[in-house]
Every structure is written in C-alpha cells, then in structure tokens.
Image (cartoon, rainbow, N blue to C red):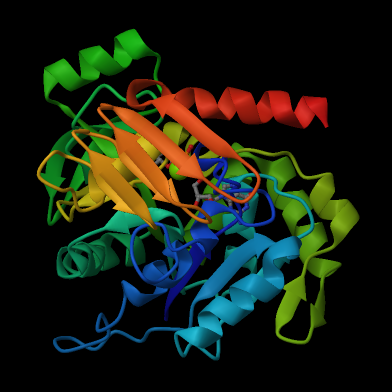
Amino acid sequence: MLIPVILSGGSGTRLWPLSRELYPKQLLPLAGELTMLQETVRRLDGIDGPGEPLPLAPPLVICNEEHRFLVAEQLRRIGVEQATILLEPVGRNTAPAVTLAALSAEAEDILLVMPADHVIKDQLALQAAIRQGLAPAKAGRLVTFGIVPAAAETGYGYIKKGEAAGDAFAIEQFVEKPDAATARRYLASGEYLWNSGMFLFSARTWLARLEEQAPEMLAACRRAWAAGSRDHDFFRVGKEDFAACPADSIDYAVMEKAGEQAVVIPLAAGWSDVGSWSALWEVQPHDEQGNACQGDVMLYQSANSYFYAQERLLVGIGVENLVVVETADTVLVAHKDRVQEVKQIVGELKARN
Ligand code: GDD
Ligand code: MG
C-alpha cells in the first residue's frame, strides 16, 4: 500500500498575524479556495490510475491534538471519510512524526511524506515523480524529490546530485539549511537541488535507518505508540513518552547521514514552500502592477505589493513593495524584503505574554 503521510504539525509563524498557533497556515485557505491541508490531500487524486494500478491507502494526517477537530472537519468537507488522524500531545519535529506513521503501518507499506503547507502547481508532474520513486523506495532507498534552486535560500536542504540510477540519482551530499555563503556557493555551482521536504520510503527502511542514526528517538516513539489510545476517529500517542522523545527533523536526524541509502528524483512541478508573505505574494495571481490582493482592497498607483484584508477595507495609495495584512486584532505593515523578520516579532510577542 502507498500511504500518504501528511505532516500538519507546524505553526507557520512567519505568516503571522494570519497564521496562529490555534489556526496555523496549513489549516487556512492561503493559496486558493481550499485550505493547504485540503490541497495536499487533493494533490493525489487520480494517482491510483490509469496505468499500472497503485493501491492507495486513505491519508494519514499527523497533527497536534489541539487541531484535531479542525483537521477532521476539513477532511470531511472534501469527502475524505476514512483518514487516520494521529495526534501528538506536543510537537517533537518531523522525525518522530514520521516514526509514528511508520509504526502504524505494515513493514512493506510505502510512506509518501508530504508537508501540508506547500503549493504545487503541476499535480500530474508530481504524480509522475512519485511513481518514479516507487521502485527505489521498494528496493529500500530513502527517496527525496529535488527542485532546481531559484535563489540562495538558507531555509532549505541542499542535495548534490550524483550518478543516474534508473529514474533516480544518487545523492553525493545532503546538507540541511546551509549558511548564506555556502548556499550561494551551492547555487552558483549548479550541482545542487533543493530538498522539497517530500519523501518516499518503506516503513521498514525508515525504522531501520532510525535505529542506526537515532535509536533513542525510535525507542521513545515505540513507547509512545504502545502507550497510545484510540479516541473516536483519532489515535492519541502516550503523552509522557512522546514528550520525552528527542526532537529532530527528518533531514538532520536521518537524511544528512543517509549516504548511498538515499536517492533523489528531480521534480519540476511548480513547487513552492509558502513560508513567508513574500513567497505567498509570488504564487498569487498579480495585477498589471504586480500587486496580489485578497479581501476588500483598493489600490491606486501602487506596485509589487501584497494586501490581505480580513475584516476591513484596505486602501493603498502610491506604495511599493509592501506587505499589509489586516486581521480583527492586528495589522502588519512590512517591507516585502523584510518579511522573514516576522518570526522574531512572534517570538517577542510570546515572551511578552
Ligand atoms: N506532525 C508534525 N509534528 N508536523 C510537523 C512538526 C511536528 O512536530 N514540525 C513540523 N511539521 C510539519 C510542518 O507543518 C511542515 O508541513 C513540515 O512538517 C515540514 O516542517 P518545516 O518546519 O516546515 O520544515 P522546513 O521547511 O524548515 O524544512 C523542511 O522542508 C524544506 C522544504 O520546504 C526540510 O525538509 C528541508 O530540507 C526542505 O528544504
Ligand atoms: Mg517548511
């Protein structure tokens, strides 16, 4: 079985004030009618045919327990009745989340790990890449999907592509979140791809690699799984055991050290990690002056800006390169080049409260 494993546990702080802990970005309709979680599930529609049949399991969503009703309701609204929803009492980053998914599956099941907060424009290209990844995943490889980099971003993993092996390529080096100088060097070399954050591997392979690289994490996840209990449609893992689990990401815990056990499939599918307001501006439709607007917005002689009005009318006159986000209790006004700093502001606000 191919199991879509949807990681929906992040808080998306850089999209504050819209994205909040109680309502993080993956549960918001940021890039269309559907929420990002719903878009992620929909992205696989049709992958089980035509062509070689592909037994597809209902999605497995892993999220914080605070979001359980929102997640269940959003899935129900798009007609997904049989999803499994695994609840984390606390976030321990992505490696423990995927480990819970692997523990819930059969050893030979193939897990398709998908973050719930990406935009992918070309669904068919994504599905083709996933199909290409099935053979190496069944053969025990950790399959990544690599994007041709567009800038020297420091928030991504970088993959140095090696020799071709079928549809996939060996990975010569995997570097998670390099510093700015290194990212610029990687970009200039033309030899690196961005790690898309999606993965394909069997449950058996993941658990075996984790046993080698982070045995304490595996042991803690096994304990949390064994202490878990069903609650209606949800499965809640043991709170104390999971809280005691070391926190780490898939990339640092396993991928950076995976060596020959990992491969990369190039992906050209209009992928974007909408991690900031400027990234969201990029994927939205623009008017002739390069503005993207949502809600009740009027602009005069303004350019290259993003305006989001939730409650009130927003009017812009003669402004450029601005991000303005209006919600019931907050208005954010930022230069479009400085939206990464929203994260620090959220940190300061948390410390203040
Ligand atoms: N269930 C669960 N629990 N999900 C989580 C948790 C958690 O504790 N932490 C994060 N997630 C979810 C996020 O909601 C997101 O959908 C996904 O896991 C990835 O986490 P991020 O925190 O957004 O990772 P990142 O963007 O810094 O880095 C990853 O993605 C990049 C591409 O977007 C890495 O895989 C990079 O290598 C990659 O380039
Ligand atoms: Mg991300």
